[in-house]
Amino acid sequence: MNAIIVSDLHIGSRYFLYQDFERFLRSISEDYELILNGDIIDNPYAKLKSAHQRILDLIEQVSYRQRVVWVEGNHDIGYIPRGFGKVHFERLYTIEHRLLIAHGHDFDEIMPKNQAFMKAFKLMHDLRVKLGARPVHVAHYAKKWEIFYKVLRKNVMSNAVNCAMENGYEGVTCGHTHYPEERVFNGIRYVNTGAWTESPAFYLLATAEEMTLKTMDDSFGA
Image 1 (cartoon, helix red, strand yellow):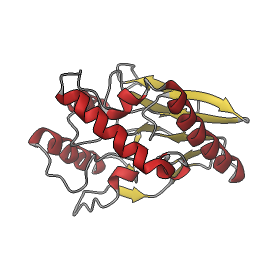
Image 2 (tube, helix red, strand yellow):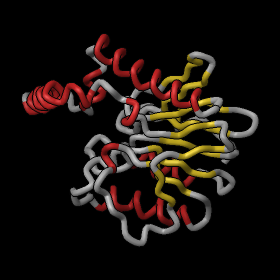
Image 3 (cartoon, rainbow, N blue to C red):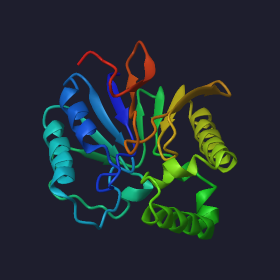
């Protein structure tokens, strides 16, 4: 059980911290399994800039020397890679029946039921940026709406924990909410690895001895 888990890179987004992630990717020891927990791509149909395409190329290269797993997120739907190294594509993933790994969109009952509001919110955010507001990812801006954001986070966490309990897992890790956090809820360890669209970026270190949420600047023995 040696794994590094990240989520929500949003490769292709103007907010993707691609330089930070490239440094991080190059530093991962071959002793670790790399798990990409959803929303790795921002728009599966958009052409990528060369700097962002290089990240995908590096992920492919890494897959030849160590196990790489790509867990599908809602933004990844429709992305069809061809000849993408030895990357394993999964809907869900588990580690030794101790840790359930799921992006989190399947546990989200809030956003699917409020699509009209979400579209209006994104349009308002885009307008703010065009009018000169500091450009940040829409999820980063949404955190200003604390009550709504807490409801979303708790909904994802509660459903993820219930799924883990029903299937006998000790813990569960998600992305989706762009909010790094770790909690024990109803006796189950819940970890959210946040997003690589704002700094600091986080990852989950999972070994036989520990399961710890860290920032990209933390050493993990690579």
